[in-house]
Image (cartoon, rainbow, N blue to C red; front, side):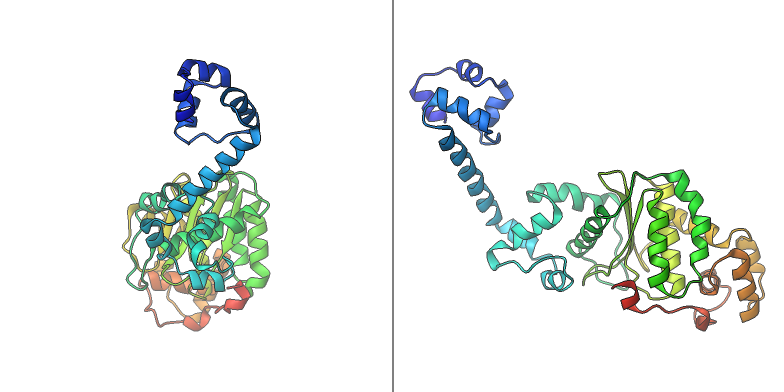
Length: 343
């Protein structure tokens, strides 16, 4: 296009006026950054010659070539290899791409057009959350961002409005009544329905290899809050504490995305979320009465009933607060089956 303008001796001002575009749009057009619309193609044909179809096809071919070049770059190839592709396909997150289309399929999965956009939307998010390395599981940014994206895709299909922090916080006391239910098939649909009323999409999804996360939260572009759980540890105390912990992040740290890993080094906001979860679980008795408890299976069961939670949750709190050792009263915990959680 620059060659045509130069050969015809046309000034930039003349071309800009003839095409009815702004100066910055003309610069974008010449740099190949502005896509040619049907209307602009007609004007180009009138000013530069040829046909509108010619200019539309030329624009299409140019941007296709740019994408092909980008997809062939070594950096994008290395990026593609950071994802557990086989596991993502096996889990149904992706349709297996051909060898030359892996990067393109991954970009489409993440809903981005290039690597820069992925970094801004996902890698920067993990950096913002001060992603912490677990002592128990290997961490991979690729695997973790893929898990988060999978949760986002599910959440986007759920019927949720904008996040209502006040309403959600109040609902947690009612949600506690679900904790004694032994079957996830029964309580998860109710949990999702109750949270959706306050703009929270609760998603339970298994991690792929390399992702050590137990939970994550952040606000979607729609304004809905994503509360994502991996249910890595299949017991009622772990599942429900993770839920109330993530709920704490949404209430206390609404605008900050958070990712948790079991046995990872703690931080101030993690301690705040832990305290929030404990306060919800132990209400109306509190930590003081928990620590004054003389534990046996009858006193634990009574304490749980007064707090309206499962006995397993109270056992977990006693263990966490070192009131009993981690081998005590574990038979009071409910163990879930992975298939009941659709994992």
